[in-house]
Amino acid sequence: MMTKICKSCGMEYSGDFCEHCGYGKEPERAKAYDKYKSNRQRKAEKEAAASKPGKNGKTKKGGVSKGQIGVIIGIAVLTVGIMVWSLWRDGVIGAGDKTEPIVSYFEAIAENDYDKYVKTMPEAIAKTYDDYMSANGLSEDTFIRESYADYTEIFGQGYTAAVSCGDEEKMDAAEIDDAEQLYEKNFSEQISIKEAYKVSTKVDFSGSERSETYYYDVYVAKIGFHWYILNIDDYYDNQKQ
Image (cartoon, rainbow, N blue to C red; front, top):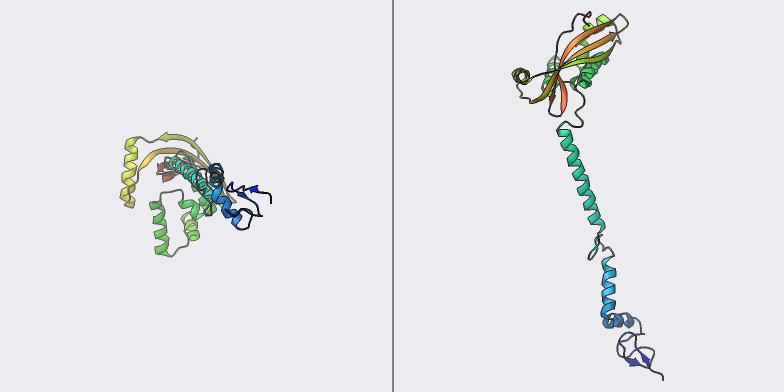
C-alpha cells in the first residue's frame, strides 16, 4: 500500500488516517491539527482572534471594542456638555438680553400670565407674591387681575401692551452696592449683581376704551446667569418724548 505524508505531524502513514496523530479521522483530526500546527499558523490564528470581539464586546488584544467606542463617545459628550455649561454659567449663552424681562413684564400684565410675570423678577421677590396669595386665598389669575385692575379700567378688557426699550444707563459700582443692600434689607437674601442698567421704556397700551403711551424707567440687573427687573419707576407724563 502506498504510504502518505501526514499533513498534520509530517509522519508517514499508509491507511485512511495517520496512526501517529489521528489526522484524517474525525474528530481526532481537529485535535491533531491543533497539536502539530506550526508557529506561523499559531501566530496567524492569534492575530485573527485578536481582531474579533469577545462576548462582552471587547477584543482580546489590540483594536477598539464597541465598549471602548462607547466610552470615547461618552467622554466627548461630557466634554462638550462642560463647555456649554461653563459658557451658560458665565452668561455668554442663555442669559438673554437685558430688555427681555422688561418686555415680558408688561406683556404678562396685559395677558394676565402669572408665570411669565414672576419669571421677570428674582426668586425672593416672586416668593413674596406667592406668600401673599397663600395668606389671602388668592389664585394666580385673581392676583394678577386685581393687582392691575386699573389698567383694565383705563384701557378696557383685552388691552395689549407694545413695549419699546430705548436709552440704557449703566449703573456704577456704588449704585449696584446700594441695590444689593436694599434687596437684602427688604427680602433677607443676599444677591450678587454682575451689572445693572436703567432702561428708558415706552409702552403703547391699546384697548377697547382707549389707547395711550406711558413711559417708565426700568432697573434691570444681571444676577447669576440671567437678567431680572429690580424696580420700575412710576410712569412719566405721556407727553414726555
